[in-house]
Image (tube, rainbow, N blue to C red):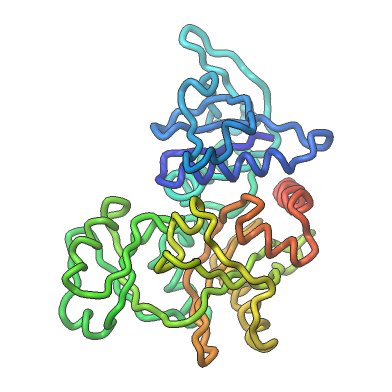
Length: 353
């Protein structure tokens, strides 16, 4: 099995952290793992998978570099049967075949259907959603549209494509505060909370450094609730986990990148303290949107719940953060599926599919 991590997106380092955790959880007696890192420039390298290279060192995030190992390629040729090719400067040689790829890539060029397309062309099974689901979930505009089509409420928002700005009528409709965010990104990269329209142009520029298409979302005053979903075993219905309520600690206006990964300042309550009917509604919505997007393997679905207990879909992540402290593994641990068994289930489900 090849574990592929790193990548060209802004979430490169988070993918490395995820890879380190997954490597640590996999039973080497059951699965033989080939750790393949992708540099920020897009080069694939065969790494050693050493834990120290895939951990947070203080506030320094890990990174895959060319020096991490030898260049390697996966030909998009189904007759090669997943044969990895070791490409030295003066020769090309076959390294061996892989039965499965576990792409723990977050963001562009990994979670958006691109590597899934490569693996489909190569005829290699992989963990997680396919091309369409990955692309649709990655693009917040289209995931919201599909949620609405499935009968799941979303908060007010506007879409700004390249070169567009927000007209006065839309500013009046959305009100303040708003969140300005890239349409196709994760880990809270490029997001700004705008409390005065004088801040908007700067916030738009920050978001467009990540993606030319930007969402402007009206702030939903309420609690952030997250739910894990796993594809059913042996073709069964998808399963929803216990719910988590996540809150940034003091010093963070919202659940931003620093709160998630650097400051150890995320507060989490599992199960989320909600009435039973609201819990059941959120779990039903989570599995409904998982099915509506044609997801496979796993997902984390995020919602807002207001003081009046109204529920709004926020987003779906087809490859959520996967460190032991991340929401997804923790909600499944609380649901009776500890981290090593969760990883093993994902691998077996992908092989069966």
